[in-house]
Structure formats: C-alpha cells, structure tokens
Length: 147
Image (cartoon, rainbow, N blue to C red; front, side):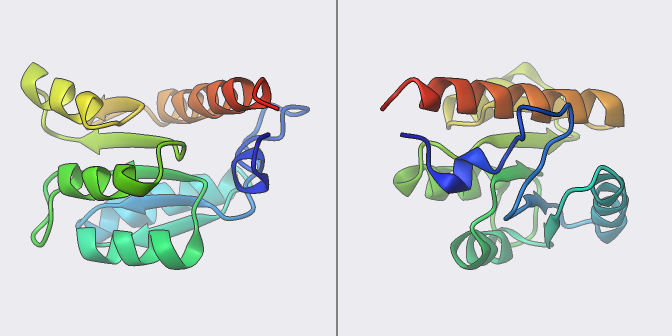
C-alpha cells in the first residue's frame, strides 16, 4: 500500500504536484536554492533547502521530504554520497540530480547509485517541473499496485 508520505507527492486529480512534506533541494549555491525555492513556491509547493550534503541528510531525517533534488559538487559531501546514504534505508523516495557535471560517466554513476533522473545545469524550469511530475506519477502508479 502506498504510504501517506509518498501519496502526498502528487495529487493525481490536478496537474500540479501537491506535497505535504516538500521537495528538498540540495545545492551549495544559495542563489540557485533561492531561484528553485521561488519557482517551487509559485507552483504551490513546499521547498526544503540544504546548502550541504550533511545538512541534506539531517533535513531528510527530520523533515521527511517527498522528493530530493541533489547537486553533486558540494564542499563537505558529494551528492553521490548523499544519494548512496539515503538509498541504504529508503529505496522509494524519488531522487533527481541537478548538476553542471555533463559527462556521460557522471550521469550513469548518478543513475546507478539510485537516482531516478539526472538533469544538467543550466536547465529549463518547465522541463524540471515536468520531470518531477513524471517521476511522482510513476512512483504513485508503481506503489499503488502493491496492496
């Protein structure tokens, strides 16, 4: 059965994501976090922000986000390491990398570590939102078949 936490990712009756816990954006660039938070707020969503990998893990434990968008390059802990840590205990939460690392190797590594998607910066905000919605729909559809 789909958990309430996962079900809150997307209100399937509407085209917008509706989350109770929020989308956690992890990036060491505060301007990027401000930009993403503003966009997400305009979409009627709750943005959870983290400026480092360790802060992301703390917010993951404390705030239980519905979705995580991770940068890779951070000073304390890479996004790869954050993804690896989360996947040790949670295989369900959607994770997407948002990174300026554009080499195939980086994308493949991120996906093989358990990310659901990988978008290269700079990105189109419409595409980002569409990908978040698509992943959320897939998670809800996949989990709702298990009863």
